[in-house]
Image 1 (spheres, one colour):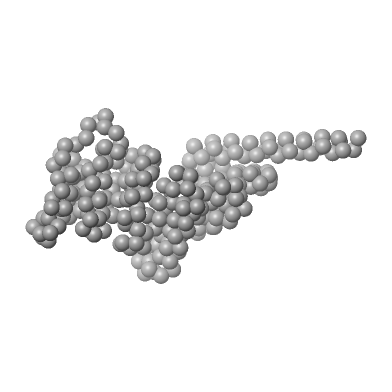
Image 2: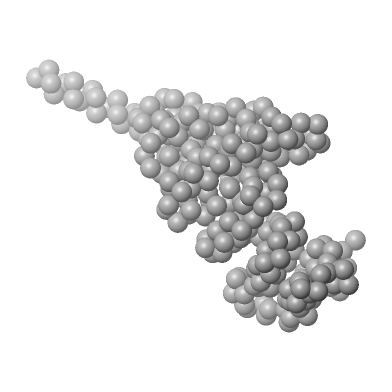
Length: 282
């Protein structure tokens, strides 16, 4: 049960399981600083900026990295404590638009702990660079995350819990979808389709209906951009059915709007072709 009398920082410090009596003397000042930031420093006011509200987490993270306490640093990277949206900290930094902080966070842990954290950091870096418009760098990190996720699924997570295996495949699917989004932004629709199709297959394999619907919708958008309106309509209608099945009203409305738009584009294209044919025959 959560102790409501404790601050989010104090709860996070408990989760880190830092025992100052067991810390090496040369690292004591670092860990004492972490304790200060999380348990003693005044809570930021309610009207503080988003970054100010989590500054104690950022400072603690960097201090832990200074003493190579990677596992404890990863707990802060993925903490939801004190995040009003209940999203993990690395993701929330992106939502707030603090891409450089997200990059700094993820870079420091990449390659330092385990494959799952590497996947999380790779996707996080891809998201940040994609948001900054640096699509090639985003592609590089998504590819790296994708390869690691596949490796986890094939070897490291063999024999582990089904939940962890499902998580690894989930990250693989999200990496593929993100790669597709980047290539679509670059106008490379056929390349995007290849990744969306792979993401769709994984979503179907693991029974992720929400991601299956989004992958179908992405395929519809890509084919619409290529002028293949009937294929686009078919994908949007499939996405619409899934949205209705799972009760996702927002995506249901979006899929319906997309399907109707492609039908309109198809009708307009047919009308223009007819008039062009009439014009050429006169």
